[in-house]
Amino acid sequence: MTILIKNGLLIDPVGASESKSDVFIDGNLVVGIGKPPAGFKPQQTIDAKGYWVIPGLVDGQARLREPGQTHKANIASESAAAVKNGITSLCIPPDTQPVIDNTAVVDLIHHRNAKAGNQCHIYTIGALSQALEGEHLCNMASLKANGTIAFSNAGRPFINNLVQRRAMEYAAGVDMLVIIHPRDSDLYADGCVHESAVSTRLGLPAIPEAAETAALAKDIELVAQTGARTHFGQLSCARSVDMIRQAKANGLPITADCAMHQLFLTDHDIGEFDTNKLTMPPLRSQYDKQALRDGVADGTIDSICSDHQPHEIDAKLRPFPSAEPGISAFDTLLPLAIRLVEENILSIPAVIAKLSINPARILGLPAGQIAPGELADIVIVDPDAHWYCEGKNFASRGKNTAFEGWDFNGRVKQTLVAGQIVY
Image (cartoon, rainbow, N blue to C red):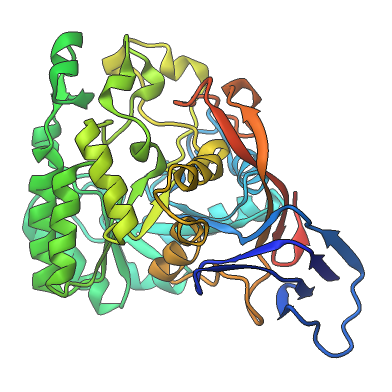
C-alpha cells in the first residue's frame, strides 16, 4: 500500500520543528517528506488539514496484565487502546505472571500479540534476577538474543547490594540497558501515601522521600562503579531530579523518566481517600511536582511514560491502604501532553520528543521519528478536539482514571503502524 498524508502540520521532534509537509509511505516505510519520490502514486490519500502529524508514541512503561492478570486486561484490549490513543510501541516491565526471566515467557507474549493482530509493537523488558527475587541472576545473554530490549528488577529489592552490582556488571557486559525504579523497601514499608501533613490528617501510613532518594544515591554509585547504561524510571521527588542532574553533569551514562500523572497531581488530590489517586511511587508535594516539571523542561528528565496500570473495579473499592495502586493512563497520555504545551511547560516538538524519539533512543527502538527510511508509525491528531474525561468511556479495559471530570483537548484521528492503518 502506498499512502499520501497531505496538508497536515508535521511535528519533527528530532529537528524540534513543525511545518506543513506531506508524508509519503510505501509499504511499511516512509519514503519521502515534502516531495514524492520518483514514480510515487498513492493508493490512498489521507487529508490531515488542521491536524498534527506526529510519530507514533513510545511508552517505556506499560502493564498490559498479560500473562497472569487477564481479569484486569490483556494484550488484545490494551494494544487496541494504545493505538486508539496514538501509542504504537509498548514496553512491558518484567513483573508479569510468570516473570519475564526466560525466553519462553518472551515467546508467549509475542505469540499473544500476534494472535491479537500485532496492532502495535510490543517489546519486553527482562528481569535482572530470577523470579525478581533479587538472589540469582537471569540468563541475560539468552534473553537479549530473543529480543529483550533492557533489564529491570521492577522495583523489587535485591538481597544485597553485591547481587545488584553483579547484575549491573552482567548487563554492561552484554551491552544492555538497566532500568531501575529507585526504592528502599525498608523505608517504603507498608506506606501508601507521601509523608506530609496530608498523610497525618488522613491517618495513612506514609512513604518518605528518602525511600526513593536513599536508594537512588546508592544506585548512582553503582552506575559509577559498573559503568552500566542505566535508566531511572518513574522518579517522583525534587531531590531525585537534583541528583540525576548532578550525575549527568559528572558524565555518568544515565537517563531518567517520570510518569505523566506526576506532572499534574499531588498528594492533596487524594482528597478523602480517593483510591484512583493511589500510585507507586506516591503522588508527592507541589514542590516535587514543580521540580519534575522543571526537570522535564531542562532535559534532566529525558522522557515521559504513561505507567499504565489498568485495574478491575473491585481493586479500587477497598480501603485506601489495601487498594491496588496504579492509573489507567493510555487515554489521557496525549491530552495531558497537550496540556503541558497549553501551560507553556514545553513546546509542541519538545513534548512529542519526550514521548517518542527520546524513549526510542534510550531503549534502542526503531521508532520515534518521521523520516525517509524509517518505519511508518504515524499518528494524526486533532489538537483542538475538546472532550470530557470519564473513565467509563476509556478504550482501555481499565477505567481507573485519576483525571475523572477533567476537560481535555486532543483526540487521535488515525494511527498507522508500519504503514498499516490500525485505527
